[in-house]
Image 1: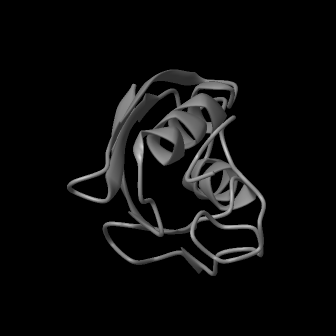
Image 2 (image 1 turned 30 degrees about the vertical axis):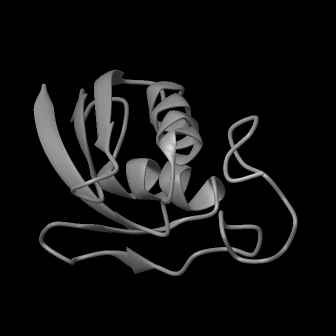
Length: 97
């Protein structure tokens, strides 16, 4: 198992945290994912045999937030629909609605 810290921009509430944790926990090979709104990051324990850092970053981006690893080797912009973006879309079943 390995542990990865992913920096996340754009989270504003507990619904954001729930959406990101849910997305990360659905990646095959993830043992655990803990997201901190205050720190703006996720700590993910995963099996690199099944998941790559790119898979984990992509899972966060798919929820509508920008994400990058602590080493900043990967940087992916947020997609439209991010919490607080003014798109009217809500993430995680009630985020910032």
